[in-house]
Image (cartoon, rainbow, N blue to C red; front, side, top):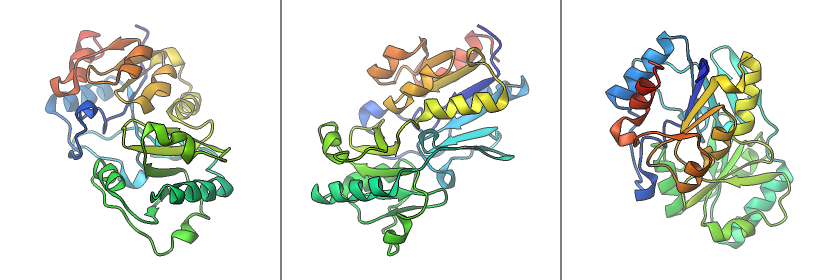
Length: 265
C-alpha cells in the first residue's frame, strides 16, 4: 500500500447499521476509532469528514479535529483556511420544478444553503431523515426567499420507485441516496467523487495516496475517487461491489482494526 496522505470518512453513516434502519444516533465514536484517528493525524495523515450534511450540522468529536470537510455530498468543501471547492448550485428553475413535482406527490421538501436548511412542510420521512443529524425540520415562513439563494441540496422523503417522478423535467440536478426512505438532490456532476477530486488537486495529493471508508450508496463515487476504497462490513451490497477491500463492522471498530492491520497506525 502506497504512503497514505489523506483519508475520507463518512463518519455519521458508518456509526449506524443502515440495514436495520436505525432512526437516531449520537455524534460520538468509539474509543478505538477515536484512537485510530488521533494516531493517523500524529503520522501526518490528513483526515476529511465526507458527509451529506451541511456545514452547520457536521459533528465534532472531542480529542480530534478533522483537517477538512466535504459537505452536502461534495458540493461544498472547506478546511480551516476557508472554502476549497464550491460547486455550481442547483439552478432555480430546477428547484422550482422539484418543488412542483414534490407538491403533486404530496411531499414537502427542504432546501439546504450554506448556513441553513428550510422546509415548506414536514412528513414522517423528512422528520426521521433529519433525526439522523440530530436536527428538527424547520418549516420556514421565508421559504420562497430561501429558494432564490444558493441551494446546494434538496432533501425529501422518497422511495426508489418515485425517483423518476421527482426529477421529471429537471436537467441540472440528480439524486443520491444512502437511506431507502429519503433522498438528497444535488447539482449534476457534483457528488462526493467530484469533491474529492477537487480536494486532492488542492492539496497536491495523488489518488493512490488517498483512502476512504464508507457504507452507504452515496459513498460509491467516493470509493471510486480514491486509490483505496474501503467498505464497512455493514455497508450496502452496492458499495461492497465497488470497494477495493471490506473491513470489519463499525460496531466492532472496523476502522481501527483495519488501520492497525495495514500498519497505518
